[in-house]
Length: 437
Image (tube, rainbow, N blue to C red; front, side):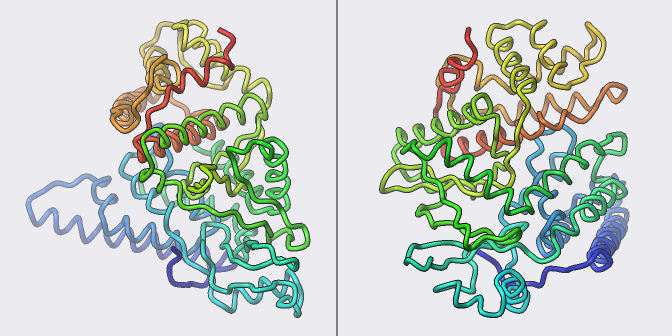
């Protein structure tokens, strides 16, 4: 459900001003909270003053209003699994996954005029001006094709493509200067990659190509349902697609346990196909990118803007990491992890052993031959506890390799969905045919 409309701020100066006011508001809130705590006889830490409910509301509301890369980066940070973010900040950012404002009528009108010309209403038959979905980069409207088929129009917010670099830099600076991101961590490689990814997501012609690639790969698989691109309704900033029915994927919780298990098994199987067959992965784990057709049992796949191609060398090394983990080969695990891009530290070091133990823990649902009960799993708490230990080794610690971050973001999203739906899946059984063991 979309919230009330708010204009998307356009232009670098105006968007920078939003960040500046956000920083000022956070600082003022910290000062007021600090005075209150001291008056009560407490000696609060700066981090505790930053991560207050007031600052959480201020941060998420402002990023949701800005949309574009500012909101998207917040969503990306929200999927952190303890690698470098304070858990509290990741939880704050998580609210951005469901936050969205629609464009006001005037901005929508300007975008449609620019894309289709002054007689656009003749081309957009039955166009519903109120969107039924709104996200970080665009909003979605219903309409019909000329031959009467149900369709949707994904309309990009004005100015978001042009503001990607400055938004990412400004938000990262805000989080760093405020202390919300640990100062000893260099996230510049991750930020550079995020900019590249967001430019691709803002290119709707590229998204159409990704969607067509998934249709070619999965279109004959009746377990899935995908929209089709409508070229006559598509431009670089507008994507026309056929409408596909379905309910939110979370509604599968109301189905029988066997059906919940089947749906999640299907999604884990899809991830393996994406990684090791297609080497093209839809990396955005947002639940809204999946829907479910209760009449047919099909899983609906949506939103391919965040798709990412991986080189054979990377997927091969990741397959070797999984194979080594399955057979308990710690030497093979270390070799594969270094080929992927991890820096493990000196041979025999506590840091190296801690990293490998963490990898074994994280991959347990994939590598242990048993039905894994996600609804009863304590793994997120265990991973968060062990990941916190990694930050004690500041002389070795580096941000995770970018490709790994995207894969783990997707795996983490599936884990969260499986937990939400209380699914029980033998992921190992699905994985084994891909490992040749």
